[in-house]
Image (cartoon, rainbow, N blue to C red; front, side):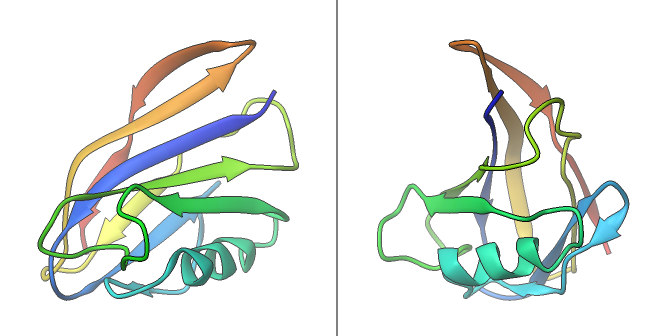
Length: 116
């Protein structure tokens, strides 16, 4: 089962940390590229290969215009736990949802977000 999780973000400063099974990524600045987010996620020991994309092409992760960040798990198939996000006070993550694709069906789960 390939799983995709996504959240939207807007803001012009700050950092966020993504958690997978309780393990944190390094802090990711709002100005991170999709490649920067990929590297941060793959620094978590149990994440080996992900594809990261933004809906706003050639953009940074968080900016004044809302951007959706998509994460596709290319290995470790099966039930992937919902990612957690902790953001600092300068970051604004809105409308966070997790899109899960399984056997051609898409469902949504809430994505946990909190201020750091």
